[in-house]
Amino acid sequence: MVRNNSPDGKRSHMTAFVSDDDGATWKGGLLLNERESSYPEGIQAEDGTLFIIYDHQRYTFNRAGKPGVGSVQIAVFLWPFWRLMDLC
Image 1 (cartoon, rainbow, N blue to C red):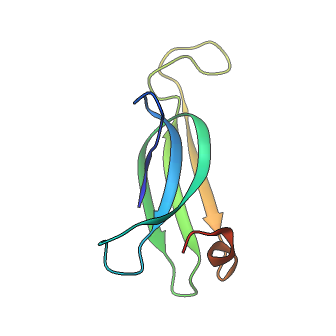
Image 2 (cartoon, rainbow, N blue to C red):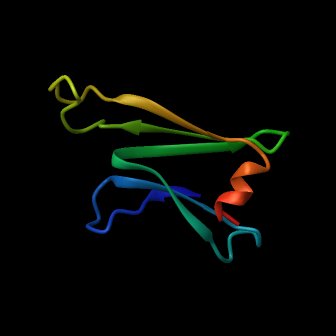
């Protein structure tokens, strides 16, 4: 599961969690991006690699100072390395 985990409830602190019991419990809490982020999506490839894609700065000003012009970010975790990052 990937979700915003901001301490103040904003769309920031995109964080990844893993469940090894079909979603009954979630472990980890690997911070992917502490900046504004939204709409995460993830898949796991046959080789175990995890791909997480999400929007960055969709609703605020980007680095160039333009409103609503963000970027798409991707995080890739190669198997078995993501298991070593305390995700599970």
